[in-house]
Image 1 (cartoon, rainbow, N blue to C red):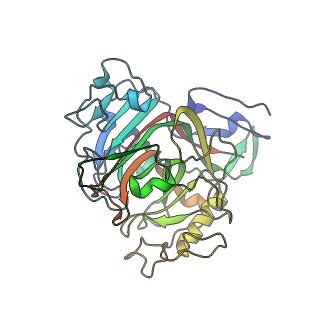
Image 2: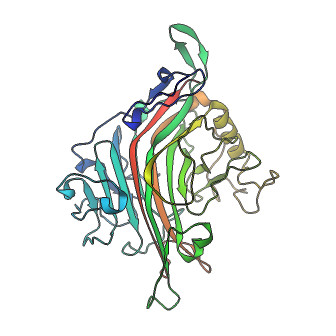
Image 3: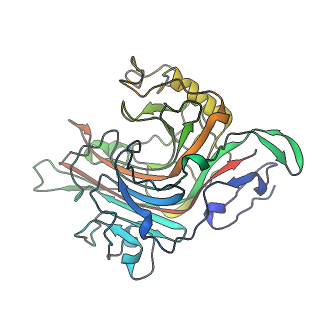
Length: 390
């Protein structure tokens, strides 16, 4: 079938084989944001009561960077992110004050576009449990309106039957800038690393841009959501798909959530049917189209491995030491016991995550590190989540 392309990218439907554009059903509302002030929020951990995620709405959540979501920014953030918003810039931008045109932390939202600029130079040195400084542009549903992307479809083109449905995350994205710095003399001199790659991690830090969704098991209200992440960019790699076909599974911290975070690959927990671009370890300025699928079987595999505490593995399928096998679920790792029925799962929050963290050889990776710095600029156009009938 001839490829079909519908703009903006939230409705960009690219199909192959026998599928048609009608088989994609949008879950996230398509909105050209013209009044953006309410979208900028701040908050702590996702599981916290006041996490900054707006319900039944889009939001630009700015975390661990101080109370910067309410302060307009007047410098041209688009010089770094590639998103050129109309004047006055302060209408569409929020970030750190005092601001600097050298690239103090800021985010942008305009119509179908969003952009995130992260920078450790002027960000508060506080320990972030389970990750780094991050911005999250996404959409969340209230409990009564959360979609069920894995429920069986019962009517198709007027024909009654059953077809398995899938969750799809997609959008156009760019990572125009990633820069790292390191010092060995207390900051008297700094060495700069432009576009730091996997070999530069401990001389600068880690940066990533990923599509994400939080899935909730409605049959076990006491269990935490499960996060799925599809990598667009990660300077620590790997960009290659696992040779054993098993996706990575882990948890962010003991009182946090289980998650699977992988490059755009077909594995036991993720599927690629079509994508315009795949995960990269090098920054890029042009908008590229990324898409990831999660089938019912992917979800079953993910849940079974979590319930069995089977997480990271090597090329032979052997679990890596200290990867996430947990002797006391609910204490030293998140609780387990999730349903293996895909019909039980809803999506409660989905979007795009930009994140950075400093790393050095002695402390590993931590947001309190002072002898390393890293910055990243990223852009998102037309992100959307769908349910799809193959």
